[in-house]
Amino acid sequence: MTAPLAHSATDFWQVYTASTCAVERRRAQFFALLAEGRPPDEVLQVTRYSLVSAYDLMTRYRALGLAGLRDGRQSNRGAPRLLSADEQQALAARLHADFAQGIVWSGKQVQDWVHAQFGKTVHLGRTYEFMRAAGFSPQKPRPRHVGGDEAAKADFTTKD
Image 1: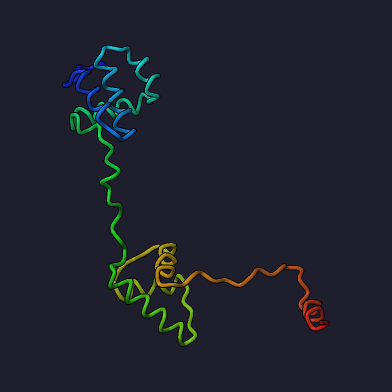
Image 2: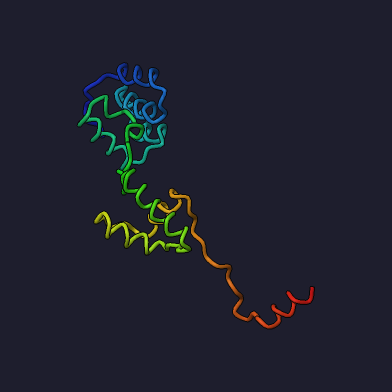
């Protein structure tokens, strides 16, 4: 962690003052303090980085230079969608058509249909996201108590 840095403390402090991103500022502070010759233990204590994180930062800085100080999460687009807009539309149309006929799909049925129609394997949990996007919500009957007496329930409801 004490290897020479390619930039001066002034360069890091300029990044620190110019940045509005907390992650980038913290990283710039870390390297500025190191470039000033502060002891690594003090730098870790001030910046609250662990030794493992500090080594990761050093590796990133050596590979990318000052660009390695940036927080790359803003440019992360995330995972690609599992179903395209057209595929989601086709699924929604099928769900609504079957619902109009009194057929309510389960997540497993959606999973099987997506695999048959589009050749895509999706996890069961994701099928409920597709159903919600189509305007459906997971439905299940209210739980019944194991010691419940159906005859007493019927008597109670008819005594009104």
